[in-house]
Length: 211
Image (cartoon, rainbow, N blue to C red; front, side, top):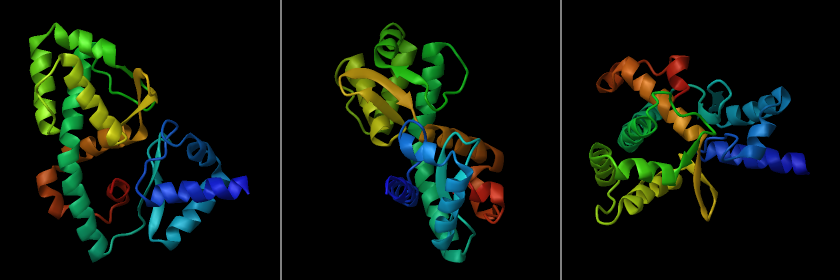
């Protein structure tokens, strides 16, 4: 019974567009670590026209098994919407690199400490300008302290499931698999040039896996 419940929850998460990673869906992620379980989930998804995708097993998600004209149109619409959503994420990643003075990309499970970010931004006007630019992009409020504005940014990333707060009263956050997906999508955009998306063959597996 427990096995069937985990299977059902895992499939529902995938079909509703969630990214299954050890941060957001630990039980489902552990479930998918088994070859047998992945095969069972894959069989079910195939019946819905979807397939189980992953990148280095860092996270799992459902993508189209193959492209039809309707799915192609749907994918283009999703892609264009994601392009808008990804811009604040790009700015956030750039801000984090400057705050930490580290060009290493963030990975699933990496910690984000609100107090440390605020402390760095308060002492750097350039970082503050970057923060304000992101706040405008997410349609936040520019009024308030650096803490208030940084909290707005973090909350927006939590809302979109890019970050997950460890505990309600503790301002420490973990990067989720969705952030890893966006990072891979950015590489995809840079490689194929987003403005030429209409010319991309979405039947290529490497591209299908990101849609």
